[in-house]
Image 1 (spheres, chains in turn blue, cyan):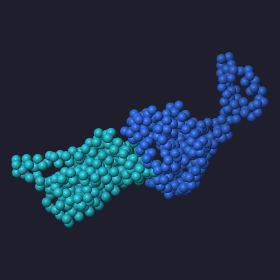
Image 2: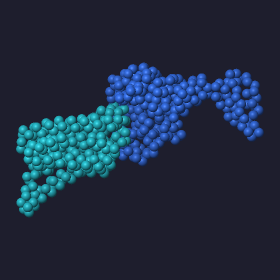
Image 3: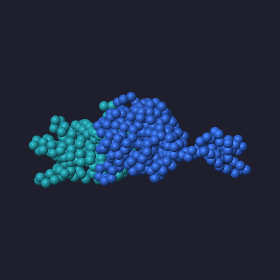
Image 4: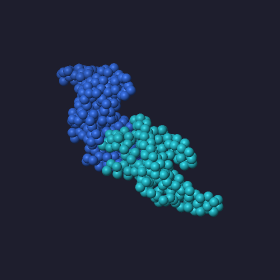
Length: 284
Length: 241
């Protein structure tokens, strides 16, 4: 669905190149996470992919079309949710969606169904000026589905959401994948990436340092051990066992039988650890 | 077509919900009503009381209406533009089939179309002077370009709506340019031509009396308005993006 080769970009008037030869591809039905600290080139890449910056070098194809030559029709097929919600504050949620819906000539989703999807069904007739930040974020998120897009570009979709709504949003993204849609997610939230992305790319200073599946990364780069925490005479104790041959490990099975085990975790690395290790940079 | 209709309905809704916008639209209507019903009795009074015939200045009064109507429509569009800029809706429109240039075409055409029809209508209804419709059309079209011009002045120079309101009031001095054109006897008044409104009133006044000047004022005025809109649009896009 997305094919990027040797993508370079320099902002007009800037000496330094912002993107220094990016190379990656995103397949149909994939959730692809684009991770990096602020200023790494995430937004620039996203802006190129959504057709806003056209003076790039290299090849960028989305759904088989080179983006340098696109027109308004491109937007019939993609959905975009920016990090900061943008709406007419004097209009209600439904009035906003109705205005934007009329911009599409293709099949569109029912605005009420979209509101229901993100739990805003009772707020359709409320003006945006009366919305909380979280409500605006959810409306912003569901608006990206208005034209039933093939590809969704989501920028920090869970920012500003409470845990319940953040989970709802993550489930909706997964449901899109299940429906064969492609999701390009820009974030610096490692937990979100860990939970829902099929693959992630780490971008730092205009270069992609690594592209892989979060699960693979976490397993491969972690310690192949399990840590057991148990309580003995009221004090919490810890023990670690290698994963290799753990079924036959006598000490491990004795401990499980004899002790009051409270927690047990494999020691895979977190995505954040890996990011810092690979890039030498934290995400803050 | 569906897009334009949806955006126009959106604009109407915006106007209905904002006192400032309602006032911008009402102002030319109130002025027209005052002219239609207030000026003839005032003339009668002045003729008898001061032996002064206001009718000599009817044409200028009408040209003032032709100038003020699109100007107010321009401020109205400017306030909507400021809202859209501040709420970052340009960024969203840029990623819809409308696209950013489509948005600009619409936002600039809205005041031209509304300004044109409203001005034409009001000038015809007030009718203090005889209206020559064929000659009126190019002048009213030029005047309607004041709409995008004033909208863009607000969009390019105001940081917010409060500043926009201050600028719109300060721009009242621009009316001195047409006044110079009307009052100065020698050709020095051409200097006032750096202010686009000058050309609107001059072309309007020449329409009835001086055919050669009428063509000169209309063509030059159109050119100056188009240049002004183009320059301001560039300035605005730099600020908005």
